[in-house]
Structure formats: C-alpha cells, structure tokens
Length: 417
Image 1 (cartoon, rainbow, N blue to C red):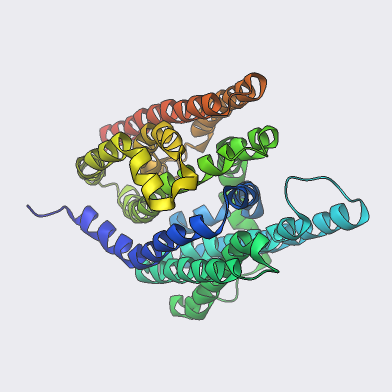
Image 2: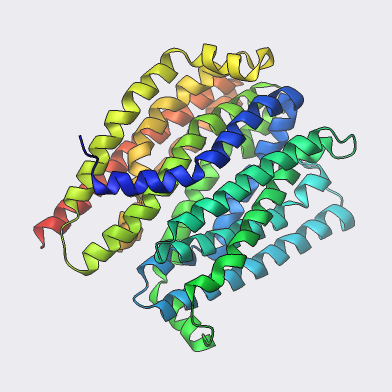
C-alpha cells in the first residue's frame, strides 16, 4: 500500500533527525548511570525555566515568518524576533548577576547553573527564528542537519563533562547549552542560501509587528501559560520534594515519553503548517491531507503506545538501570496524555492559519487552572505521585478538547469553500 504524500514527506523530514536522536538515546543509557537522579532533578528545573523564558524572548513573532505574504515581510518578522531575543537575553543576564552577586539569594539552582539560563535562552530563541525561516523555504534537510548537530554535540559534551571532577555537577545543563550553540552556528553558516533581503527598514519591522500582533497578544500568553503549567512539577512541586528521588524519576519519564513525540510533532507540524497555509491562501481543500495524516498516525502509534503502557516498568528499568526503579508508574501516567497530544499538537498551527489564537487562548487558561489544582493537591497532601496523575489527566482532557475544536475549524473552512 502506498503511503500518502503528506506521510512520505513527513518521514523524510523525520529521517534526517534519526541519527541525532539515536545518539541521544544511546547516550542517555550511559548518562542515567553516570549522573544521579539528583543531577537530573537540577537539570529538569534548569530546563523548565528555559521553556518558560524562551516564549517571552521573541514574543512568538517567529511564527509569522511562515504565513508572511512576501519574503520581505518574512525577513522583517525574523529581524524583529532576533532583536527582541537579544535584548531579552541580556536583561535576564543582568538580573541574575545582580540577584546572585549583589543580593545573594537562596534558589533551587546553583549560581553556576542559573547563569547559564540567559545563554540558553539566547541560543534557543535564535534557533527557533532560523528554523521557521528555513521552514518557509522548505529547506527541511537543513533543519534536520541542525537538529542532528545540536543533539549529537550536546550528548558528547554531557558525556565528556561527566568525567570532569570540576564540571560534573553542571555537566547536563552545560552540555545542553553547548549543543544548542553549535546547532545555531550551523544555521548561520547556511543562512545565505535563502537569499533574504538585507535592506529591511525599521518601518518594515514595525509594520510586521503591527500586522502580526495576535502572536504577542494571544499566542505568547497562551504558550506562556501552557509552558508554565507544563513545568509546574519542577517550578513548584519539586521545591517540596527536593530531597526525594521521585523528581528525577518523573523528569526522566517525562523526557523519554515526550522526546519521540516532540520529534514527530516538530517534523509534521512544520510540514503541515507550510502546506496548509499555501492551500488556504489558494482557497483549496485541506481536509484530505489532515484526514490521511490522522489515520496513518493512529494506525502506527496505537500498538506502540499499548506495548509501552503494559511493560513500562520493565522496559525503562532495563534501559536505565536499577536506580530508576519506580519510573514505570510515571510513564503510565503520561502515556494517555501523550497519545492524545500526538495528534492535537501536530494540528496546533491551525489557530494561526485561521487567526483564531484568541479562542485557543481560553483552552490554555482552563489547562493552567487544572494543573495548578493538581500541583496544589500534591503539595497539601504531600502526594507527589497523585499530583502527577492528576496533572497528566488534565493534559489529556484539554488536548482532546483542542482536537475537537481543530476539527471544527476544518469543517467550517471546508463549508466556506
């Protein structure tokens, strides 16, 4: 049976990232044996700050690059996002230097790890902008190359730093920063191939900011809430269980249930975003592509998720070693949410295509409230496992509701053709 074109193109895009992710997976089999659950706890707390701050750094203007009507408009949006990212990163660095050296504070992160935050935010922000630029021009191969460089160099750095007596304690965050920096450099070396206009004026940047104001007004707060609520177990809950290995167990479970899903979603969201935008601008039907994508996705994913759910504890303790016993519970909590999100996140670009960011924003307000309730329950009841169970359940419910809403957007568009 011949696969639909949308699936074929998506698999090509994913295949470019397979090597880097394979290296990363193999390395984690080593890292989980040379770094302790406490080391992973610090790293997960560090990265939770990054995922929240990166949304503020560009105000999500990078998302407007794909839907811009001209290359000049796309270049103006990119310039705008890059400048905002640079200024924001410098402000974070200044604030942290003041906080840690002029007014010493108590934090869940060591000073050396905290001071890596602005550098990671800067490299993540520029990488996102360049990714959407290359996505606009359908340079999917170059995106995959940069992801391979990022993951491979980051893994090698983490393994190497683990054997340094001086840098072992910061090996996981520092290796991640170095990997992201090299992936960013790879984009810069290939940026000239896009032949972007270089004479973008301040007025053009202002016009792009005004035209795409829905991104900072609605998409940024939506993603900020989603990222904040997603990281609540590390930002809030971990403070009350800091000495408990369960934080590290949950962190590794979260990483390895979401890592393959994020690879898949990132690839197909890029592909579907460009293709759907082109068809909507040309007033063509989009139902066929999205329906084929959803059917093939679930035919492939369901048996894999079922196997992972039934044998979660055996699979993960075998892979990562005996010190990670108990990880299976957290994997089972997360899998139903991840399965629903596999489809809904791949279609999240639809709110941008149809300029319905404001409506989508309210879904994430509800999600934030549900997740806060789950975390507060865990703190009050001193029940980390129960908090994670309710936390994952809230994600599954809202992801399902979003999927229904995205389907409604498609139906309304098709009726209007």
